[in-house]
Length: 223
Image 1 (cartoon, rainbow, N blue to C red):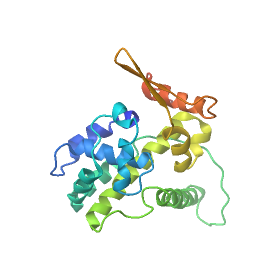
Image 2 (cartoon, rainbow, N blue to C red):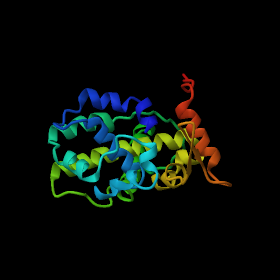
Image 3 (tube, one colour):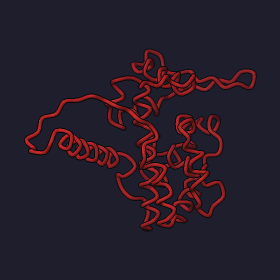
Image 4 (cartoon, one colour):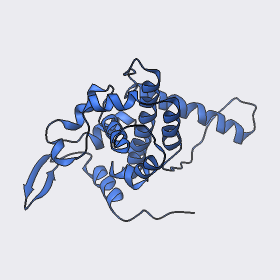
């Protein structure tokens, strides 16, 4: 979630999200973080409070609190989230070739095929994750859940791009398994917590690259 904060998500939500509830940004962040960890229902958001997680993360809300938060959404509130989450927080550019039997000009054919491919892939990955089923009987609560899911998806994609080329192309489930849901042993010394990550972990380099890119100086821009 540090990546989300550095990308300006918390500030943007603080400026625009007007759901009538205390600490809406913290609740939105809890929902998104739970989805990144694999939650596909409101009850599953409790994944953020299991084991040693409370020692590492403060401000995580209970699933019942988050369910109430989602049910407070109106259509207008959902649109506020859409403005923050549907647009790209991060830009990633790739070169590719494509084959088509379309008679459209190359640029237009590329745009059409790209849109179809991207949308189909996103829908498939969302269905494998937080949209495995909609969590509420309320239309606006489900719409809010979808908007949070899109934000989580964008963050997972950005994390993959920052990790390495393989994870830049990997599915959300792979990014979650390799880079997000990582077991660690918590040790404390002099009021400081240290996480000991697994030995001989095959994705340690990718995770370290993601960590360094997230916590280090900004990456250089290219023209």
